[in-house]
Length: 359
Image (cartoon, rainbow, N blue to C red):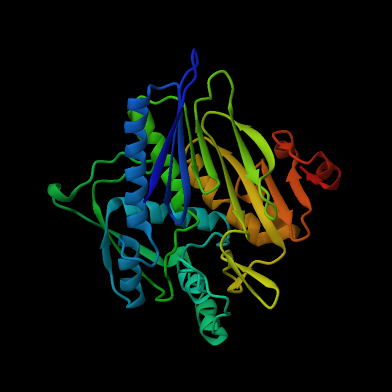
């Protein structure tokens, strides 16, 4: 992971330290306000190391604990995993159940067939017969089976993350050999929560962590809240900005970063598990979350809304416990909840009359 640091200071003002890197296949940035540079730099270094550790743990197709588990599941075998990974999978399974499996990290096989398990995407459609086999198998997170396994003390990892480890190893198997785990819609949020926990441990009270548009706020930017932008899905720059308060997070799912074109049609990485096809008719969804595991929720709960589409995203938002959400449909029309509308300041004021507000 490459990283660059920028320290911004001004006479009589508190310092702002920022560092950027590239991990989880996207740009990450950590900003710390009101802390002297040396301590801020050390704190950010710890966070960046944690991001790289999680990248290595949760990568879906390069060598990782998750890819090793996937190989075992494909062969119908049982695999021992760390208590941390087991906790992540259990939590993802709960979110999947809450979403009626629209958030479904078990469909890594479908994602792979569409060519999104690669650093660069090829403009080619998958073998439809192979895809149909995976769709018919209906892989779900509920197919996973967990069995606790005591570990020797030397192999235990101290619990210090957003989802605490139990101190025991876990055996994982699956009732369905079609289950292939892809936590691309969960890992960034988990990393956000982990970063906040690490910063707090180091006495950092004011920070903003941005992982590819998933952003979590700690404290404030001096006397004001952190202000962040929501990326326009078809133009450079933000479509709107909002103030993000302590403990709040925003997450965006869009069709504009990971996609390819065939015959003038856009195919994005967000797959509907019911059909095995990339979602059409939605450009982006942004949600705002807060409280415990705000990072994880900001990452995961935007997916059911995106997959539900214009017709059903409101019901999906209610099901996931969201009051602040925004959807931009395939025509670029903005749909949003009243609570979300109150938080946003749109860059182009002319867009406001085109919006459809929903409660």
